[in-house]
Length: 298
Ligand code: HSE
Image (cartoon, rainbow, N blue to C red):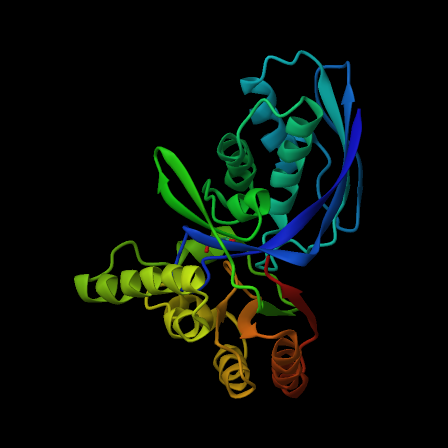
């Protein structure tokens, strides 16, 4: 009647795939305990780690959980305890981890009545609360694991993509907060045909590279001609972090989700650690605190 789940952090967009590509991290995430109770509705009974609202309608796990309950014929409810380790506004899917973790656990406790894609739909309601837009590129990888592509939002069509066996991600989180809702407002709503051609070439290249386990192709495809040029202005040291990452051997690098975290992919763990050391030097010089994570991609 109770389950403890690991709710992974995620890197959305993965440079070229704004709102459609995402990947789950193996070793960074929240923990959550979900309990089946006879009382109807969702109650967040404990929330540690971060200062976030516990009221069901103001908490992404509560809102995602309500969407789940509404679609379910179960007539009881759930209690949730959240140990939040991912900082909100860090760009590694903090809200998605809670939304996805809650609905995954509830589904499990009821004997899995819903498919993963249906769970993505419920978890997207948590994202709507957090960022004003119900994007799926964090909750999909959090629920499916590994890389996912949102091929279509309407109807929702999620494709899981295999990851090559030696792919690692390094994430540096400079300790500033950027709200996804704010960093979406500054984006342009139209692109030129020329930009589109470059962008979908890279999306196709990245997906092909993952399937073919072609690390160089993956690296070449980590380019974003639409969002990164605008958002990177909000992230101190961005160009420098990217430059030193590539010099240290990374395949490619970009903004993680809506930032300020920056990610880099590497072949081999050793390289990913070296990339992290190189990234650190940039923020040591500027004088901004940071957290760094290295994670395998499964
Ligand atoms: N695709 C979303 C964005 C991800 O970039 O706004 C937010 O984590």
